[in-house]
Image (cartoon, rainbow, N blue to C red; front, side):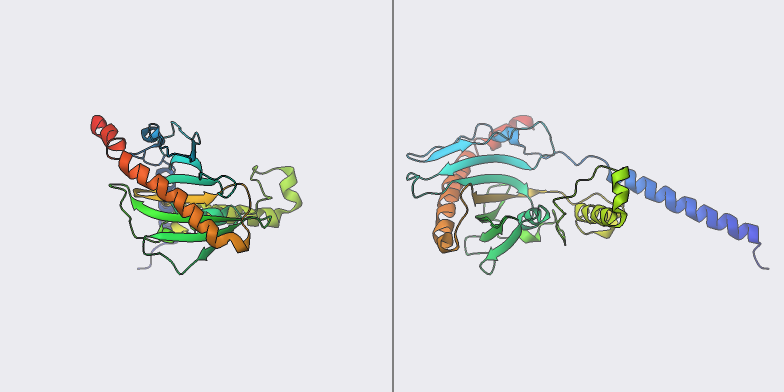
Length: 267
């Protein structure tokens, strides 16, 4: 006996309601706040390294946002300012720096085949104005700051295909949006696709976007201010590494009694 038309209609309606209900549940679940990081910027407030002749100035970034990935930032310059470039040193919960800069409209080019013997990766980062900076990244374990030996590009956050249009600012649906509806809709989809890390389930709001890693840190050093010329790249990489090495040694000396002591008191 064939099922009646009313039965098929009711079954189809129930399935549609089930699909919509499931999507609404997953979208609500995916919209929840990220889990707080165990280690946050507040734990690094007492980290204030110094070295004779060096300029080491903290860049204030302490926040009460428990999900903020940045742990500290310093401006560092060597003993001979006339020969040393200014370098920004950042410690961040593990994130994919090349993709993060790409989403901001920068061109990121690796300098070298990949991980060096010490775990470094070097990058040429070019702005939309053609100004070049040199970056050196290293992945270190959050547990003991030992070299993690992994490619920073393997981290899930963020991962994109095409950078956002820097001239487009999402302001919702307005009369002005209707002047170029196709172009605006394309920009909106691109921004949402990038925010979803090019993951279909995340794009459909079925799961939360991948966030920064808690188990590894990205230790990032890059030139600040004056653009780097192609002829100076090799010398600049050496300067950036020297500044980074100074800070990494100081951090590894301070870490057990600094962060370690704070975490013990909170357990």
